[in-house]
Length: 318
Length: 285
Image (tube, rainbow over the protein chains, first blue to last red):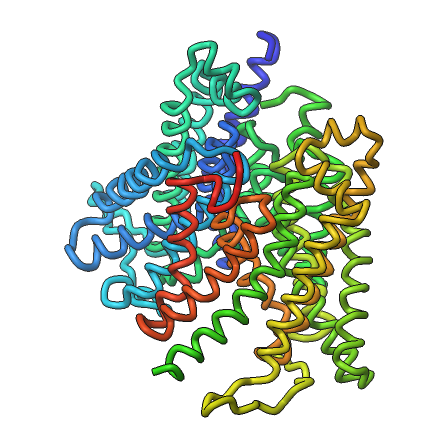
């Protein structure tokens, strides 16, 4: 990133931001607005996962943390009656706290061991949602989760019932997530994260507090994943344990890896690409998932560093 | 009283032996190639479907179908290892993810080929025998016996055949084995095929007892994770012990505590073992 590239970068960012703000005005179709909101939520979750992946730990529990955020917020709003705007940060904090609790004993493990431990944790969480019927509603889940409370505003309250308005809420949380990830990944701490993945022992010898940094990545990752779960619950008004299963976690891992782990743009590209790909190949009907999986395998075989590496080799954009 | 204990014992043993067959493939591949193959359960599923098609559509004897299915999965395993896993050697994260993609691919190909409905492989032993007032299902007994024969066969193969010894050498120290002139790539390929053969056998044996559908691969592979973590990742005797322990624990807890704990108990075991003794019961660090 040289100095000359900077104005271009600034212009690029501005154009992207403006486009993001006017999207609901251009795309009026309800179904496409729905897809765009889902993409936004996927970007938040995938970026959170990316932070954990950057430290060299493969977590297969992202959907479980989404579930923790979603169920906490739904229960807080529906049972205690607090405002959505309070429940949003609290649900993120709960997911983050669970992340620390589970991270303390498991982050010492590496490679396959950590992956299997988080996998077991994720399945356990899903089974608790399923089997604790009196609190979590069992297989049927929780219905009629209210939309976020309107914000009083001079000249009329801001409502979040329509897809177009909910989009701005998702956009806001997404931009905050991107900004924090950007600052973190380009800081000294971000470099330490990379060092942990490359050579943990060497990083430790150079004075990087290994456990502290892994825990930090896991905490931030769980927090933002919890936020995206909370947003999802109040957007779809309905959650069930099946939404937060092993295969959902897999989906986020695929997004991050396809895009390119360790970069900021990679997980974003991966989330956009894999949310839109099924739409592009919908006409192929029963072959849809076959094409999806084949595309995934092809990218990994021929672009092992993800789609982002294709952009990088041509120009150092992000 | 004896009757009450005997049924869960029999069911637990049968489930346990099936877990062992699936887990052995996973743990063998891990000990030699250092990778975890999430698509292993789909090989189990495809093995069951091949046996189903051979017995139902071609009316071939169950045991012959079982052998053909095991052979077919060995061939599929050979191709998968060569085309998908070998090019990515050394990239742990990407191998995990590509195996997940492979699982989705195989599952959906099976969905196209056989449809989403549950089917059943006709039982080779439909009758039950009575032993001192205890009903004993022959097909379950046969599943246990055939599994046991395969497990002993694998043990003998690893102990005494040249390739088996080569596999053990690679799992202990791949570099040293290479220096002794052991063809690493051929050993890896063979271990992958052996894993697929065992998975195909497991799927085919469980087919007559439960049912076959494109989605049956996920649960056994999850159970197999519990088994190999419990026994020690990469340890063959550990996988046998872990599988039988898990089968019995699940079966007895389902009978005496409640069915909802049957599935949860395995994941508790994983977390406990990984936190307290990551090398498992019989593993070595």
